[in-house]
Image (cartoon, rainbow, N blue to C red; front, side, top):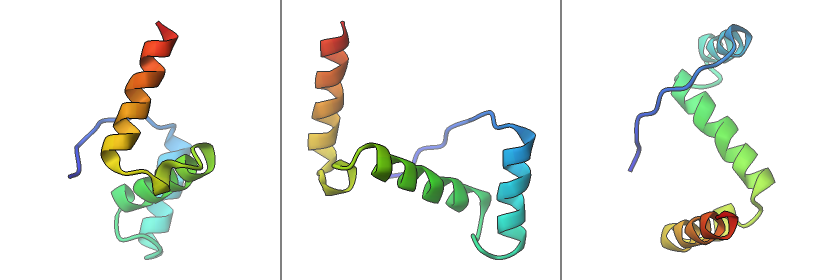
Length: 68
């Protein structure tokens, strides 16, 4: 399931994303952002791609509780 979110980006980032879209590298700006975010999460959270959604959510909740 996909959710719609609003983000603020520096104009330079948006121009770069639009250029990738215009060149046909990505079919949409949304797809370029999803790809970049997926790669970021994969790098930052090595376990991200191997976790089931429910397990990932449980880890996030647990992490939030530990910060309190």
